Length: 292
Ligand code: CP
Image (cartoon, rainbow, N blue to C red; front, side, top):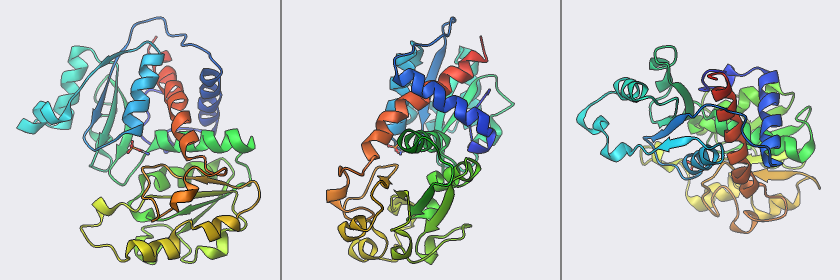
């Protein structure tokens, strides 16, 4: 694995290899890298979880992390992303984690620079490391994804998490369904009624309503959305005994999920964040092993 920009880059075997290595790091394994590597995180869109857990993963692997402040970089003088990455390649960066508002921004980079690229999220396109930590969390819970019924609910059209998970979860044998208002369906086949699918789901994966991608136009009030498509306390009571709740976060409390459910027994939302560090360690380690 030279880069990771989309879940389509990974075979099922490679996904399982990442899960196993993440588990090993979680159990206390340390990096086997022998060379000293330098990495940087270029976040042109806001992030708390992805950026900070990558930085934690990089420190746990004893990588040299060079800070890159997008708000004080020469991109503000018009330097393109490609030219910025070429600069960092010349300076000697081995890996760049990039989040950018442009879908498929990485097409201008992969194969054209020697620095490895890890996609930390591209517009509404892909979020492969989130998908991998979601998969790890489900695998940790159930021991398999085969035949698990995973219902992804919410702002599907704007969700890079839904896009990355749709393909990968299906290839791992899960039954993936989407529920959303018809306006937010995008290219997916989706159900418009949430209540029909609560009771037989093993995982309810709630998505954030991405107000910032709606051009100021949202079809529902927060209260209306919560009643129609939110995980309310009444819906949670109808879930299967061992079913779990997930959300990539950040979450809008009392919009896509009731405030009281965010830290309830079924919720794996904070577990997902914890797992993110180990999964990102595994991804970095695998990419860097290829450079030894
Ligand atoms: N889930 C996720 O990508 O969170 P951040 O935007 O905080 O990184």
